[in-house]
Length: 167
Image (tube, rainbow, N blue to C red; front, side):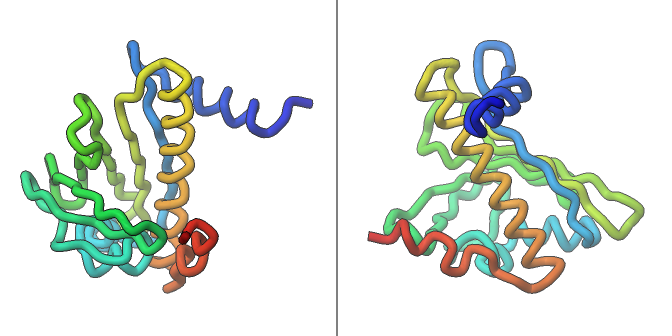
């Protein structure tokens, strides 16, 4: 039996190859209407319930906000690219790396659930790019699980989860 890291690598690698670059992907279904899920992603106040410590403002088209995570001292600039209410959200948080883009696609399921698909592009097809793509895929899976727990059950899964990372 292969070790778990090999299985994760093969699964991620098969789904990430896009032309000459790697792409991180994650998806989940949340038992909430699409408008509520969309708002939880673009609202600084709501996102602080499950993902970030705080943001300078809501995510909007062509606006750069600053995200602060509780486990890091750094501030992360995030620029909203294209945001279509209840449908699509894209932003760049790469610090200016060419071609890097996070995209979130929202799909309504019977008016009561929403499928959220996250795609982060473009990582190089080299050892560093593979490590980055795996890390980003894990991170987006965590983001989605935390959002689901927050919206469906009012639980902040990040609270205390990364205290071991604080120096």
